[in-house]
Picture: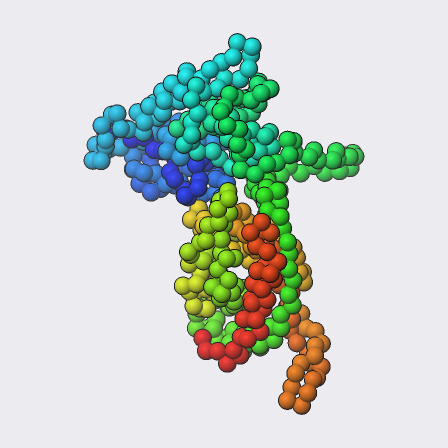
Length: 439
């Protein structure tokens, strides 16, 4: 017999912790390797975590609702045989955890507590410490410079400052801040206090609905995006008559051959990818005062869920797919999104996003950028309109299929010329679509 500790797995490159939603197995249950044991929620997706070993679930170490850091123990499994890859006691996750706790406690013991009741600070700044976006946002709102933030004691993994740590520090923060030689601001300056929402009047007949976890995250991210990026939106109307006629002509044969329908989304996505290749400075991200020009083109697509919430799965290396491949990928991600079967990797690494507002009958929109991207394109409804067209016999009025493209972009790094030329180029690719294209 051997006892193996099961730890919180890493579920994405930027995910540092997860919330335990529910345990699918209870203490004493027999489990098999790779059998789902619990359900975990991150800021990206809900997912089931499989058992690392087969045996008996000996002990559950965390409760439902607990927020657990990646790599922290969550359960103990009793296996029937000795684990071959078991490591020495000092290298087990439990020992590592104890070592981290000791390290954090040691760090806390090195903090200096003022006799006048001011918050404790570290003797030396933790210059290479990671800070979560939430902590950074609080620091900006409270005008805490980086040199002061580096002196705040952290109780998180590897001495990381948690939300609880920084809020506790703010309660007894010295008026002059933590001692520091240089007071450089954290990233960009921000107001000392966030604006307070207007009070809501509630009468006896009103229904109060609590936001679910996903809606709270969406709300927080949308507000953060508007605070971070100055949004500008450019609009272009595109004539997509050739695309409509071509799709109507091939959609039945395509479904018979491929076993699934072809929608407008992959066609529009192909045009977006081609425009990004022409204007690669739309495929960038902002890192402080640096611009990161992304090598890969990873296009996210907003999908409305049955709950009314929104999720944005990503097609990685979108430029490597042909139209058939894009169609299959779009259909697969949309289906798994609605069935809550997306993996954390499906939501990571997007460099540009499209949102099909036309599916709700909207002709245009002003979409909000998915951080840290710098652009998002809303696709309006395709509608029939009378339009002037050029013919060999001269101008004529004809019925055409048209749609609006609404391009929102981050005006910190994307000027109106680039933002406008990019969306115009997308429209050009759509209008030049070959109606005789083979597939």
